[in-house]
Amino acid sequence: MNAIDLPIAVLDSGVGGISVLRELTRLMPKEHFLYFGDSQNAPYGEKSPEEVLAITRSNLKMLLARGIKALVLACNTATGAAARILREEYPDLILVGIEPAIKPASLVGDHPRVLVMATPLTLRQEKFCTLMDRFSETSEILPVPCAGLVELIEDGELEGNRLDNYLEKLFFPHKDTKIDAVVLGCTHYPHIKEQIAKHLPHEVKILDGGDGTARETRRRLSAAGLLRTEGEGHIEILNSSPDPSRIDLSWKLLNR
Ligand code: DGL
Image (tube, rainbow, N blue to C red; front, top):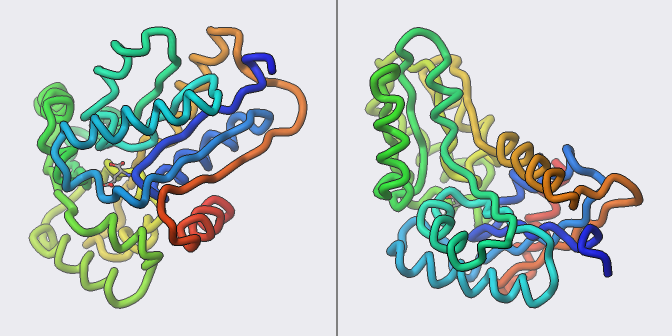
């Protein structure tokens, strides 16, 4: 098979990266995609960086053995823990990661106050601290660690009491605060964007990095002469969990 016809692999700790796959397929409908959700190991965001690196490395090896032309690391947590090192280990691989969309959020108004929702591990990593430092002069950035939220989404709790209670408690400390933007710094969260909006104290711009990651992937493939522009695209979804409901949930989220 020609390299151009190989699939683009999209990797996440579970169903989260489907929010990025949606942007990728919208932008590059002629491409083939191989999505791997590692729900068996979710949540990555409550593991150590070393564990997330080891898991991501082993998932990448498995995907390379199947034959892929690029890897989209559709997980903020894994990008922070593994992208730099895996780029050194595989210098010829097109590897595109994702990071919290603080840059566009910092442009929402004058010295905006920005809530950054992300996993505890993303917010602890050097990559995030550097990003936050870069924009802290022009914006007020408030990290909001969301331990336990990925598990709710993995369980398919996309609305209802459990999610309402979680979000109500999460935003309680900010209920009297004027917020200018909310960054969804975990690829699971765009799946519950409407629920998040409902629990914020007022209407706010909500941003995520999915579209930027899709555009960067297209740019890298095009520069390498690997962008597929003809024929019909195909999507395959795999999951490490023995529970088939994760694959069903992935398709449901993709087609919403
Ligand atoms: N979807 C992953 C992210 O973007 C997080 C997942 C997890 O904690 O497993 O950070």
